[in-house]
Image (cartoon, rainbow, N blue to C red; front, side, top):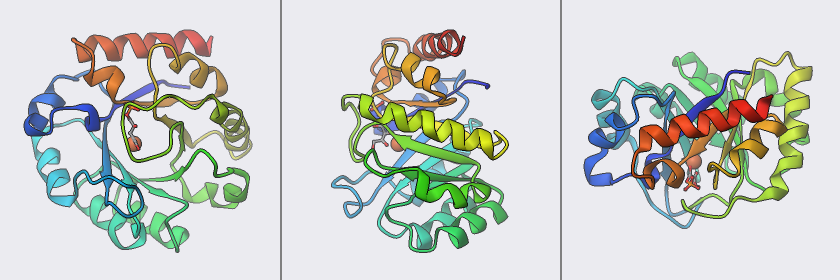
Length: 220
Ligand SMILES: O=C(CO)[C@H](O)[C@H](O)COP(=O)(O)O
Ligand SMILES: [Fe+2]
């Protein structure tokens, strides 16, 4: 599996987003955490910032929607030029329709599961997905401690994805750093979001190289 690193701009300087995007030329994606004060108790940014970022960088945007009404808003993120749009299973009321709309608009379609949400009930949705995101912290804030309890679910999800042809990317998000990334890769994740571990480092580009090397080592 190809390892991909998606640094989260949640940990970047919001006043200098274009510079912060330019600081990670070796990133595969830029992870954009959209929070609405309803699905999670935090507020970050929305469509205008995504539209501006899209013009400011060539790196594709990986939009993680932590919002109460993803069915209404997700297609607009695809229209705004996001390369990938991920909705939460806990929030979506019509996930099949919404995931299909995301794809029709030319973006990759992702489904995110909170730490306590089981993956098995979503097996029938896998054909609609390009990526499954397993949260390794409770969504809402950067800088939280990685939840090891999610690793068995990463293993089960990898097995489900394998049974469905192995096409779907398996992303982990939350508390991923040089220490925890190996456990995630060993369990079967292949796309790694890292906020603090990248933008908290003195050299964000070097931090990405280090994370990538650790994940590849762990894949064996
Ligand atoms: O979705 C998120 C939080 O809800 C963030 O993407 C995630 O927390 C990244 O930050 P860090 O690597 O610092 O944990
Ligand atoms: Fe995220």
